[in-house]
Every structure is written in structure tokens, then in C-alpha cells.
Length: 259
Image (cartoon, rainbow, N blue to C red; front, side, top):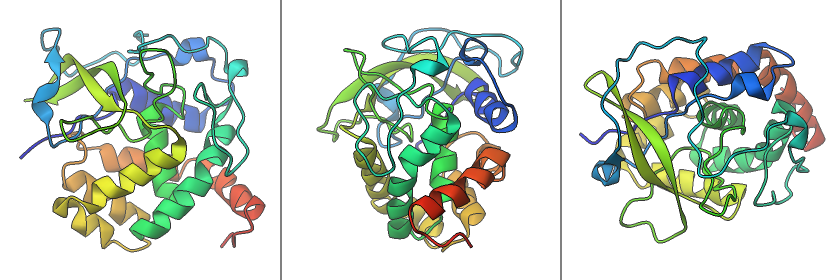
């Protein structure tokens, strides 16, 4: 069975820490991230380092893998009005900006997939560290790859090459891989929906209805990520204070019912 890697344990911790803490500085947040390749072609990544043990020190700061460096200050983030197109250099200034920028797309995509928008926003937050660790293209533009989908041989769109870490036989291996790059957040969500719908193994996830935890759990069980705690981590973000408090406010701004 083909496998998909997932956002690094450091990025997992980052996303969860950002869910629980206020005022977390970007310098303290920079962490190495794992990117999940498209499972349809796991062999395209080129290994660049030997395997390292699974254990890690959560206090250790590890440089992020990037094509181009991201801005050094949270104040450099770009605010996007809900429903508006994000510029190619988009980087959210806060968790609230991240949620507000993604929410309209998550709401439409969740309707198409039969799940809840909170699940999609939480998954994207986990994958990207609330938008602070987006993969960038060779010219430094945002790839808008919110869900870590790899560019296989069938992908005809733009690509962004980034260092990634995959779990194989319990070991982390650093590799370089090509990932799908999109013109916009909307395109990233649309491709994510197509990705799930076109693969029979995600059928159970798509049949979970509005039960977001079941949707996420079924994704994990179908092999979306190799991390056995992937669904739990997304669940923690869904139940975190930022998303619990922001989601009703964003719904109200969008004219959606809040309950």
C-alpha cells in the first residue's frame, strides 16, 4: 500500500502550541516540517540524508525547510478579507487571519465533501502551522499547498520543491520532493476535494456525513498520513480555544447560523 508522509512532529507541536498559547513569537515557532507526498507516486522524492531516530527533543529549534525564507515577524503577515483572493506572497498575520482567509473555501469544500469546515481548517492548520510554514516556489511565492499533496507524474500544474521528512519503518528520512502549487487558496481546496473523491480508499471518510471526528479518523485509517496520532492532533486543533472561538464569529460574519 502506498504511504503518505505528514507534517512533522515539530510542526504538529507548533500548531497545537499555537492553539493553546498567546503571544508565541515566530522566532520560537520556526520548526522543521514534514510534507506529505501524493501517495500515487511515493518514489519521486530523492533522499538526501540518512534515517534518524523517531525520538525528538520538543525544546530543540530546527530550521524550517523552505525554498525561500519567510518573513521574520508576525507583523509582516498579510490580512485577507473572507472570500477575497490571497496575494501570492500571502502569509497570515495571526491565527484569526488564517481562519478568516480559509473559512469561505472550507465551508464550500466541506459541503461538497459532506463534512464540517472546522475539520478542513484544522487539518490545514496542522499541515502548515496555521499558515506560517507554507511551501514556497522557487521564486519565493506561496504554493498555497494547504494539505501537503505531492506532485506526481500526472500533475500538470506548477510545482514547488521542498525538503521533506518521511516515516519509513519507524525512522524519519529527510528527502526532497516536488509538491503541487496552486494559484490560490480556492484552487488548493478544490484539488483537495478532487484528490479525496478520486481515490476509492477515502470513500468511508466521505460517507462520514457531518461527523468531523469520524471524517478525520477515516482519512487517517485510509492512509492519508502515517502518523497514528494524526486524527487526534487534528481533533485537538478542532477543539482548541482559537478555533472554537473563531469559528462562530466567522460564521456570523458570513451570515451562517452559529449553531
